[in-house]
Length: 476
Image 1 (cartoon, one colour):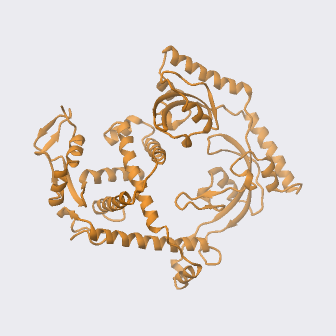
Image 2 (image 1 turned 60 degrees about the vertical axis):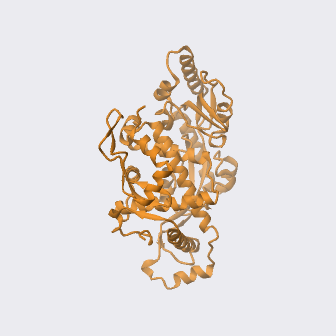
Image 3 (image 1 turned 30 degrees about the horizontal axis):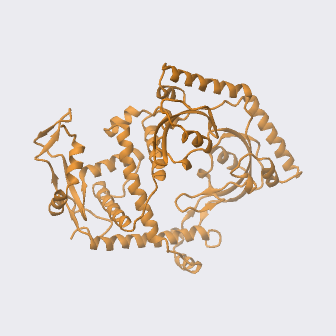
């Protein structure tokens, strides 16, 4: 039976005696000098890959470095130093954290991994103009294999991040420590805080006509009929007509998802499907209208494909919505009622209505939620409007596309603005506290890696021994 190049490498690296061989002699990795031909058959004569580092009982291959370099290039990442030295050291450090995470029984959920996988796939597809074929050509493997490899990589990455958070979770600083840290800091070393704003909004969603709703539903019924009659496959129709760009390229396939990852109405139907040959009834979600087809169920996950169609909002409906909001804004300016009262009573934006219209900004890295936004963190349409407003001013009504892809109309109030400035303890204590906490965390992480290197077997290919590494102790 023929084996591909990657299959041979994977097979041999997994064998115990090869691990022992790596530990004794990192360097050229070959199978009697095996190479793969265009037809994936193997011949004797050439090196397949090269072991350049060994960390504990794990080998780092030269191909690992090239893969990471290629991925970074796609994402526009720059390296602080020689990539030939920086990349293998980063991989080695990740292996140290992963090893400790396994010891500490740190786990990540499949749902978190699946969600991030799709984000990466969609991002990469955008980089190659949405072409699955171009992405497969660039990565030299089919999309299914790209997704599987990415799933393992991201699972490891999330495990490493959890391990890092565990190592620094007890770090806290007092106000006195923050003041001491910045007391003697030169003025030109103080961080610059960009302009930040607090914004309130009142939202009104233009009404869609019954005729438009019926038109969309009739289209979906037609697609269902074509699939049932065998005139077209669901995948083909999804590629042609679905208005979900992230899945349309994949024939409507979502990938394995848990209930919590899906719109509740969509999930209720998707998880009740049992026959992969049948198409669901029409489902309305907050994104539009769908038909769904089951691919596979696996435990508490389901993989389905869908076709999304979004009703079109008429210009007349948008104009009516804008006029209504402008009338409300006029009454606010005339002090008939406050902006906050109007937001609580009239706005149909569920994310801000219960907060009197105040928009909230969630930081995914720290988990901290604040009402302050830098301009680039606001929706582009909101940022454009509030950029020139005065504090307390209420805007004219304008339209925008919200996070769910729907056309909505909005009026905004600039509640507060802090112009960009050098940080000060009085105005920016939280920002400065975050700087000190981050510094303490980085110091602990760095020292943990240095200590870990001392207790773990490491061996480098001679080509890497002249590198300027971030962490000391690799060369023993």
